Structures are given as C-alpha cells and as structure tokens.
Length: 383
Picture 1 (spheres, rainbow, N blue to C red):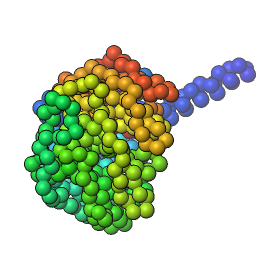
Picture 2 (picture 1 turned 180 degrees about the horizontal axis):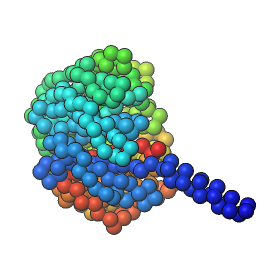
Picture 3 (picture 1 turned 60 degrees about the horizontal axis):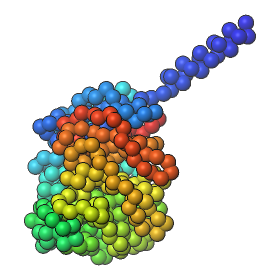
C-alpha cells in the first residue's frame, strides 16, 4: 500500500510539473518577398533547436521586433514607406492577436526598443531620418507618438576613411538615416545613431510624459569620417557602450557620464580579421549575459567576430567564425546564453552556435533553419 501511495504521489508531481511547463517561443521577422512576415518557432531549451515553424503575421517587411518583459506583447515594425508598428497579444499557445497599429513617426522603421519599465516604445525610422516615442498602454497596445525628432545636418563623408584597404563599403551618406534608438539602463537618457550624418544623438528622457530633450551637446560625431554608426550595446553596469560602425567595420567604446547622460569617445578597433582586405559591412552585435564577450556580425566577410571584454572596456580579438550563411544581419543569444543565432539574410537561413563556458568560444551546430530573408530573432521569456 505505501509503495502504491508513493507511486501515486510521484505521478501527481510529474503531472503538475508537466502542466506548469510552458513552451518557449522564438519570433523571426523577415523581408519580402522571400520572407512573408513574422514566423513563430518553438524552442528546445535543452538544445537550442528551433522547430515547428509557423507563419503567424503577414505585415509587409515585418523585419523589426521586440517583445515585452512579461512576454505578453510582441511589437512588430513594418519597414515600409509609411511606417507602422503593430502591437500583438501573445497567447499561451503562441498565437497572435492584433491589439492595434500606429504610425511609426516616419518612413522605414528599422529599430524598436522598449524603455526600462516598458512604458514607452522607441522607434528609429531610417528612410525619413526620424525617431519617435510611442506610449505603451495598460493592455500593451500603443498610443500615437508623444514625441518625434527629425535629424538634420550635412551628410557624412561618402567614403569611410577608417575602412580597410580595398573597401567600397559606402552607402546612404546622402542625408539623415536614423538607424538605432535605445534608452540607457537607468531610463533617464536616450541615444540614437544616424548613419547618414555620422552622428550619435543624445537626449534626456522624461518617462512620465514620453518627451525627449536634446542634451548638451545634442550629438557627437562618429569616431571617423564616413564611419556610418549603426547599432550599440550598453555595458552591464551602464557606464558606457560599444558601437558598431557599418561602413568602416569598426567598434568604438564610449564612456557614459551617468549624471549628465553624455558620451565620451574611447578606443576604436577593427571588427574584421587583421589581414582582411576588401569590402564588408558590419551589422549586428550582441553582448554575452555576463558582459565578458562581445560578438559582431560582419556582412560579406560573413563572419562572427568574438571579442573578450576587459574591466576597463578594452576589447581583445579572440576569434572569427564563418556563419555558414550569407549576409548575417543580426545576432541573438538565447535566454541562457548557451546558444547564439545568426540571421543570414541572403542565404535565407538561420544558423546556430553553441557558446562554450567560460571563454565564450563558438562552435557551429550543423542544423540549418530555412527562413526567407531573416532580419531579427527575439525570444519570449522563459516562464
């Protein structure tokens, strides 16, 4: 009798554990025509494998994504001439229900980020060179922009002076092109890059009103002429950031004054191998969860560069690994930091790499995921 009772209790515990376990989803945004919208995948949290691909939203050029901290709302930008951002409710089964759509505050939205606390969604519009602040309502839906800013100024140099020999990596230095926007970890300051003007803009941010105020100075110049500042990541302590320059394929470290919210330029290094010559466009970058490894995607060279981060923010080049695809646009780490994914836009696939502990070395996992023109991948939180 006791044995039967113990077996019954164990069965109940197993059933409860099964009931409590929630699937983790990954969302991939794509470009038309190869990609048809947003795809949902179910994640094997033990292996990092992406399975059960399902097209769940067909917003045109749904290339930019971010998900709320609680995983209940997915935000998707349509990278179109009349940019829109959709707020989508995420069901327990991963199905999406549209809450609403609002204007992105410009043309060609290329980046979305939520402020700390999730009360506002920040948008960078590449084609129009504008940024916008969209309020997030209680139910996760979006309100009309509380603020927009138009980048203005003389275009940057057509040829990147810091690029490697033989590089013809020059694009869109013909006017303002906002490429990324993000609040610092404190939420008091917002920074945005403009590739066309070779500038990093600095703002003070009022989370109560959703308004941006230009800081003093309102912007700083890129680390070199024609560099094309693109994306950045903050240090774990929030005392600085690393910024990737698209045309020059360089990485620049900036120190952040936590009181003033202003950046001071530090050291710049190449994101490419020492002996590389020719054209390449630097793209996405991602910092490991412990802040000790920085990974950069190099398009045309089609590699992921790994850098070790020292205590003072100095980067030491460790390795370059082939993505096994073409034109890696962005990189994503899973929630455990054990797997890194490359969105290979031109080869229409996603490749996966295991991340060794503690040195962060990448190893390719021979498991290609077919997706037309992938742009970005985000994970729902593990529950």
